[in-house]
Length: 491
Image 1: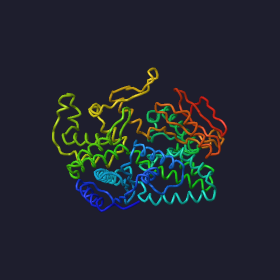
Image 2: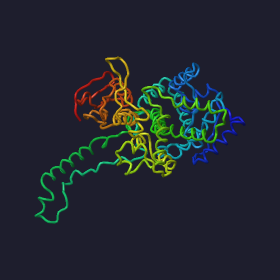
Image 3: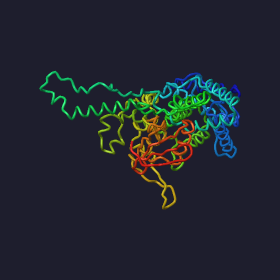
Image 4: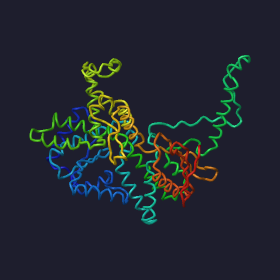
């Protein structure tokens, strides 16, 4: 790693001044200049040069290195959510690219500081990652590479089984009725009104509710636990070193989670500002064509895919235009004349203020839900697609706005992954673990579910069960350490 050259230091100062003049607010940003091979290595480790040793980082490096060698891919920048913020530039980039990347990085740094999703993240994660690596290497020295690496493999297979919303909400505990408390019903000071205030049907419903609560209190855990890794840390029969490794995987999963929850917004915000800074302040006449070419490459969209840079940028620009021209609020929403809506222009000048507000209070799901409009979907040519088995090809399935929005939100909610919770750690009174899948219209991939059960069983060391629905029927999948089984069931 090397410090910036004097010329890059000069450019960095200019770009930072432009960014702050536009209202961006960010911590100190430390830029480091890397050769392509070193940048690929850092990128393979998620932006942290000192990660614990594992083959997946080597595999990621190999893919990035081959992509760069054959001209299939190129990393222009890497930026890490820490304080100070660390960013890496590639040595061989042209000057116009370095300016673009610096402007992009300052956008990311502003987003990291102000978006609510990152309020709970560890800003000293560079030190924490190095500490994790030291601890894992110590475990390898004591217990052997094979044992530690095998356990890390199991943990990484389960790293998505965390509660992504836990930093922002407190899970409500169920109000439990004591065993010996009779059902009182509503307070009634007049005996002759008893039949009206507390009718028999109401009292019976309250009694059944109390019975369910008592049964829930006897169940372990009392409430479904969405953070499966936390439950395993507390209750699985793990060796101390295994507990430490699982804790490391869980801590890093929570650190990276907000970046996955804001991919579209984060990249859109950084792209919005690099394009604004470059086109309004930083570009020279000689750089315009090269900038336009490289920016267009970043914004390119392949058929059947979503480019988060493009979608985020265009949606932020749409929000700014809508709030500048007054295309929001009750009057605009009530207008059903398409021609009038298209020509609507009631200048308010609130666009820039609105995008700053949006970058603070939204993540990808709420961003898309609140601001993706039929007009925007039509302008951007959004559609859903699927595989036609008869024609043996992928093709457009639907251009309907509701279908497009629903599909996109489904892909973003919980990262498009199934939501499973621990509901019983003593299933059928046999110390078996039972998880339940919240079915939301899509059946689980059975092969992936079986592999997950296999890894869970290796950690729990007792049979593990997963309740789901398959083609509309309640189904219980089970793995006992030797074989998988399946049976119809209803919880």
